[in-house]
Image 1 (tube, one colour):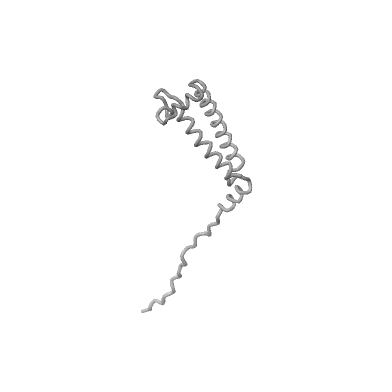
Image 2: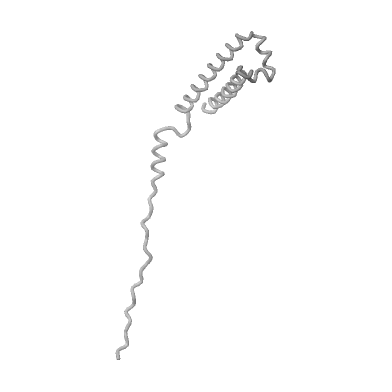
Length: 113
């Protein structure tokens, strides 16, 4: 289910980019330079702007909703049991540092005079 929602999210994001680039800006937008100018003649100029605005709103709402659903319900690694196991596995016991063995000075017999 996670992979399916992620694939839908990618498709929606690509469509959103395309619809935003097709909208007319002050410079005419991408619609004018890539042959999208004929797109306005099919629906009429006003209806094209309304269609693109509505499509942008729907795609943006879908994008945000899918992002929230994926992050809240399906994000891998979510859950109390995994948090506890990470905390438990993160606690490592370090053995106490051992001092190098000390050698006792051997009693030396000092020569008596």
